[in-house]
Length: 113
Image (cartoon, rainbow, N blue to C red; front, side):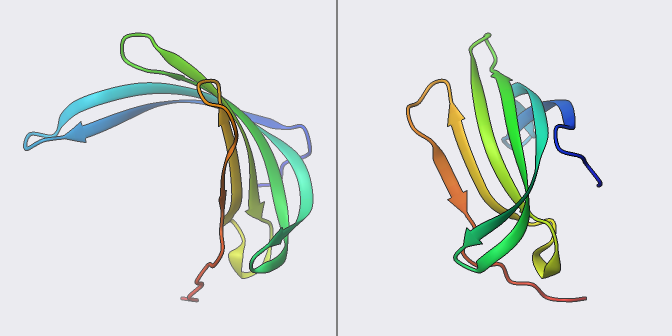
């Protein structure tokens, strides 16, 4: 995808948690998200410095019964090379908890076809 800095995508997704012998729906959440492309950035990772595409996002999650949370996020995705398209780092903060949760790729195994 060829996005320009500032371009946005918007989506609404229904997430169903299915359990049980008859695949009953146990939970259903509606997630409305906006993701904005920020631009390219050299990201320092445990795998070295990788050229990445940076995105910023906001999400609104509505649970059964009407409770909801808002989340903000930043995401870095490898822009080129053998890891292209792979998520390298994700930082998420939500309206219900203090602090930011970060996920960082420390190793990606790539096996060519």
